Length: 386
Image (cartoon, rainbow, N blue to C red; front, side, top):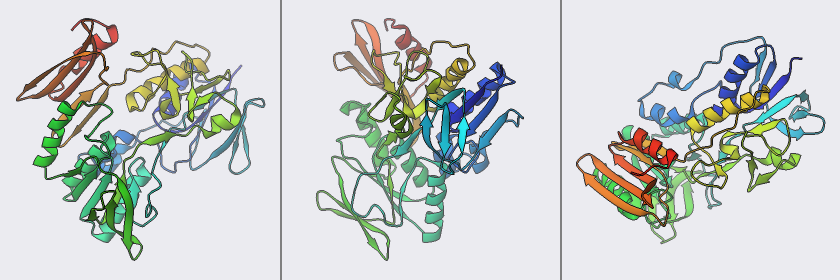
């Protein structure tokens, strides 16, 4: 008997699950519901489009037409009824399902700073964010941008905007960039690179308020009292999982993220979750973890589709390895365990930090030359000596 599979969300998990389901169950009906108006696109390429490395069209991903597939764009799910096996849309319409995948992702988080609602304040998380930001830059002749936060998103955004000729100022509340990943010694290499690119970095600084002129951003005020004149502010202060549908439906969650098992199934049989909204198995830790990378989410979509099609396979889990490139530096890193023995090698090609616990590789940082990444990843996942 043919089934009806409903997928909420059209990012990495949704795209991957659709493609896999069409292979595994070609006669089953698939309905994807997404609140985004645009067709499927790759969020990883947003900074590349801003910098001009990629064209706008290269953002988008093709999903071939299929009579068994329906994608409902600009449509919002407001509730899930686990007993009736249906979702309710904002229009009041009900969409029944045999299996359900919740891939609602995460939303950019903006702290409650006075002035955050002024024109010229943005986040950098979606295609819509990018479109509105670029339009504002063009219409208002923006030259000076403040970026709040120096995680990967903040650094990639600063690099992309600087390549367009804008002057960027980065405000970081911690004492270093990428503080959740890098030791102070390793972060200094990136600080030096920012200096070389004339990038102003305010460390151990917090934003107190944003001031405006005629309703538009004109100045930011730091907690120290220092004032910096700017034309635009971008918050890169992290995300929060969009787990409200699961919470309302009584599906098990923790801090707004959906708890999944070894098959990415939720606490309700027949309902799966993946991507930024889900807590999933961690290959390097016994604890469930949030997985916020595109490749991880694509892989999760494949395993979710296996379960939805009735051929479940255990999900191996994520390995939290962050990779990026900014200001001429390639970057790859894991978190370094506090009890590990750490060695550092600095050369003309960059920096390599290796963490070992009882001789076993338990973490690493590569800045500059990342050619060893495949080898280090393999050793990390197989828990071999280095």
